[in-house]
Amino acid sequence: MDGSMFIGTWWSLVPPLLAIVLALATKEVYSSLFIGVAMGALLYTGFHPWNAFVAFFDIMKNSMNLNILIFDVLLGMIIVLMSKSGGSAAYGKWAGTKIKSKKSAMLATTGLGVLIFVDDYFNCLTVGSVMRPVTDRFKVSRAKLAYIIDATAAPVCIIAPISSWAAAVNSYVPEDAGISGFQLFLRTIPYNLYAILTLLMVFTVILSGLDFGLMKKHEKNAANGDLFTSGGEEFDQVKEEEISSNGKVIDLVLPVLVLIVTAIGAMIYTGFLGGATDVVTAFAGCDAETSLIFATLITVMFMLVLYLPRKVITFKGFMDSFVEGFKMMIPAIGILIFAWSLKGMGDALEIASFVEKLVGSNASASVLLPAILFLVAIFLSFSTGTSWGTFAILVPIAIAMFPGTDNMQMMIIAVASVLSGAVCGDHVSPISDTTVMSSAGAQSNHINHVTTQMQYAVVVAVVSAIGYVIAGFVHIWWLVLGISAILLLVVLFVIKAVTSDEKDGVKKRA
Image (cartoon, rainbow, N blue to C red; front, side, top):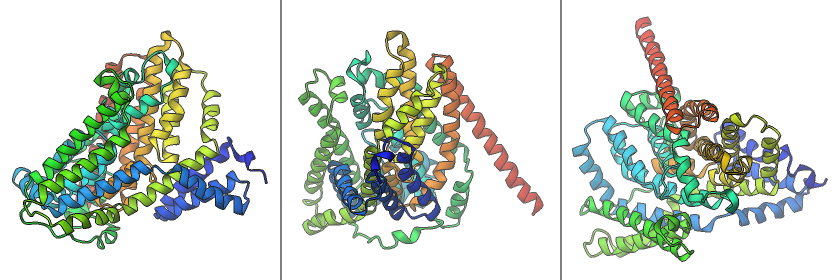
């Protein structure tokens, strides 16, 4: 059988969709991803067994991002060192004196997530490691913690001009777009409805005490002492580290500050190395991955100098943390490798060209295009588990749909809808790297995190889709954003009223 008959057709959607369905049905991610990649290899080679075997590993090898894997391992080492030094424990004790309620603990977690805007990977793992002892104390379920982490990772990065995401989006904008990539990114921020409304929802849910769907079950169980509800046994084998009694809050805070400052500095430096003439263009053209690796290395060396002279940790304990950090990241790395391979299979099967044809054949009503692109971006990002890959596919298409300066505002709205939809799809996809890392950072069962978060994200996605329909007619960002925000608050108010009535009804019947 000729494999070319499947390339660039609807068959290219089968591998990611198969992986998604199996992951949700079996609640086992590794085998689901493996089967999805294997199906992709069979389609790509026309079901030739040996050629499929060779293609499987070739595409896996070519799809892996070694820089991200190195960064993950080094960040795992930093997290282990923070724990061993007693810095996290000291922060937990300090926070215990300042944070007096469950609501305050969740707000502090959200605030930290918003502040760490440089990179979503760094955000997910750092916030989880730092705030987990605090939220555990106030009986916040691990699923709720994972949701807060995930909802303040990618949504924050995609509206932060100084982030690895901004640099990625900038790189996807063609030179003949009539506007620089960084300028386009800045102008899409107020139209990035899903990201902004997700942050609004997080604060609203915390301040109002609203929980619904599966999350309510997890929160009730947490209130009774069960933080996991299910899947907690997978974290029982995590080795308890020896924690120094000499640790102080600075042992946690200073390394985090060094990591952030060094990462920003390295991004600026690599941007200037690339030919930038000012700070703004330096951020737009930086090498984010190399900068993050450099920042983690500098932070590890800083921790060596900070901890060893004070005997907070032994030299052997310091070196052992490298292997322990590696072990801690193995589950996330395993899923990442399979997820990248699945994306690679999608590229080989030319899923991009199929989507381009699909969008192009349904692009007659220009005012509805932002909403259409938003939904297509959700579907593509959800299926592939990558928002960056979705940016690369759809941003050039969105720009091409509205050429010329006369259509500039619609182009900005269209690109914003792509970015927003990609983050939404990434947010709810079981195979997304940020979803995986949020589960790892919170030490929550991955499927629990996916299923609880999805119900919250769908509410924001529906409101955002309506917002993009409005944006197609009304090209005024504050009006579109204002209407969308009010609509979201009304929906949440209705949900709270309905769920409260259900609770009251149960009490009355009792």
